[in-house]
Image (tube, rainbow, N blue to C red; front, side, top):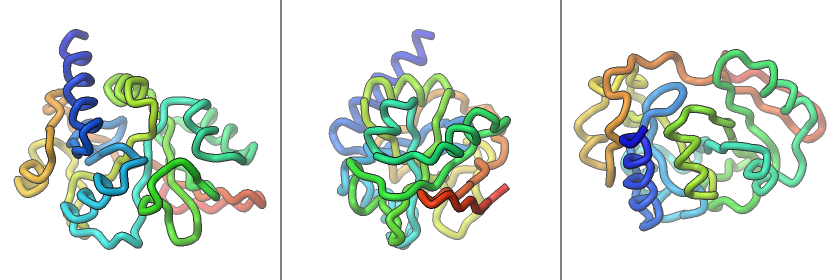
Length: 189
């Protein structure tokens, strides 16, 4: 537990200064930063060599954070989150209180409520959403473990979290798009 708290503290200090981190999530290893910091988000796009038109998701740790970013949350979103047996990302309409370069051109944002201890504690400390995008150069396969992450990514971040380095990751999350007018579309199972 002490190691977990120490890693949360180190990651928080980097993020607070506008840095980007490489960290384990409930699915795959992710690259992340403060979701309200447009400069830090731009660093991630540059590192991944990803077009800024391809949006990234954010992790949150509860209802309060969710309502800070979305004024309206469709009822079905809560049902999906309650019933999902695996990590599920929801794409919701009209986010606010996040950096503009994180919001998709159709005014949506992908979010995932997270229970994984490192991410949950980091989010508690940040009191803001955490950007999460797979730890790979855009177009390359998503690494299933820490040792599959390219040296370019590892050297490109400001801090690498020293937890779960041996873990083999499951698949990325399910992605479901929900609109405020109650349309539901599964993007990735």
